[in-house]
Length: 220
Image 1 (cartoon, rainbow, N blue to C red):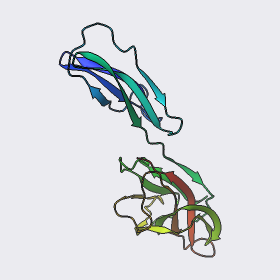
Image 2 (cartoon, rainbow, N blue to C red):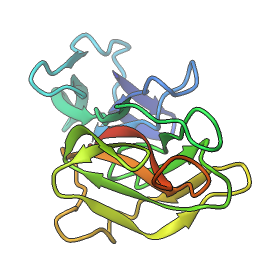
Image 3 (cartoon, rainbow, N blue to C red):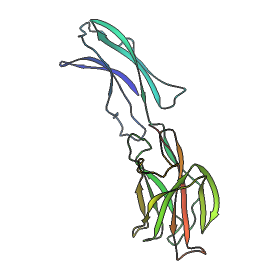
Image 4 (cartoon, helix red, strand yellow):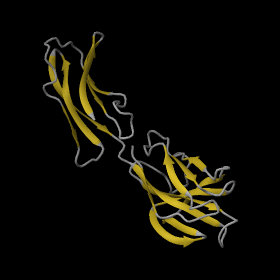
């Protein structure tokens, strides 16, 4: 994150903050946020002596900035804060061999930002043209079930309706935060474990199996 001043021939100087996340293109930032504008011009030729950006040790992903602005022909100092999404995903547990190969793998698309509302789930390496469903819960476990392992514990919630894998054995689902089961609401600060269960009638003793699992930490 950085804190800076912006001005032009058509606007008074203002305090701005901007940031970038690890996956953003090199040399770019997200659009700047105006923290405080000015209502009078600055003509001294000297500006920005009192400015800095610092991370908040108690709030990971939060940054404080301070800079100057002008009001009533005087310079003043303003303090502002921006919050980055400190969430993310990571895989855990194990997958199990299936009729397509070494086993199904789950991953996430989009981000875990509630404001962005673009989080999705996808699974690869499943048997082709078979039905399955994504489900989630609060805990991490590893219990034998079917021809594989259930890796999600606690109260479980299904994302319905079921999905059908394509000819490559892949499937995906967007997660709609506004249409989730009661008790399974996803909000900033929550952590959930996700997995995919699927039919595999031509393999094993039980005819169904599971992917590995994915932990997702959600943020603003």
